[in-house]
Image (cartoon, rainbow, N blue to C red):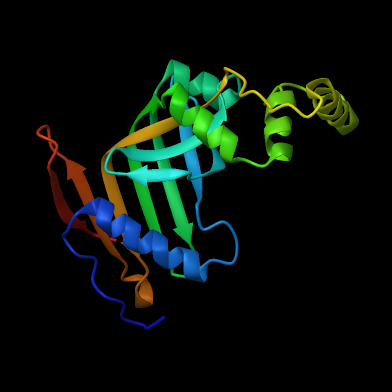
Amino acid sequence: MTDQPDAIPDTDPFALFAGWFAEAHTTEPNDPNAMALATATSDGQPSVRMVLLKGHDADGFVFYTNAHSRKGGEIGANPCAALLFHWKSLRRQIRIEGVLEEVSPAEADAYFASRSRASQLGSAASDQSRPLADRQTYMDRVETLEQSLNGAPVPRPPHWTGFRLAPATIEFWQDRAARLHERRQFTRLADGHWTSSLLYP
């Protein structure tokens, strides 16, 4: 990577995201779609964890989870959330803030069906975020579920679903020499169009 990468353009933020995301797929050694997801309780107590981006377009950014998990409960109580992508190989970050909405059952079904059988079984057998006495208890539940299905498809649990973050702001951050970094923030207007501005680093 050069010392002076191209300036962050004032352009369609979704197209810009797609370009940076594609570059990350060629440079990041593991999980270029990994993103930090920050949620908060109804009274503002925050929490953050890594999840995987599973879809993105002009409607937003999609990930999947167990709605009975801690993050699922927080999303239900307070749908405002933030995402952060950090691609160390490119020395770039993208911050996205907005509101989460649940994907349709058809979307959740389609993604669940695309997962490996082992992942489907693991999701269906898990009481995500609940206390677990020992790992063997979980592995036994996975095995019991597999035996009970007798080769039939693993049904998607109704509480296993996806969420789409509809962005209100998207900020692109590019590392520069001497910590003179470059930042451009895009803000969605009431009419759906975007405006952008550079920010001091």
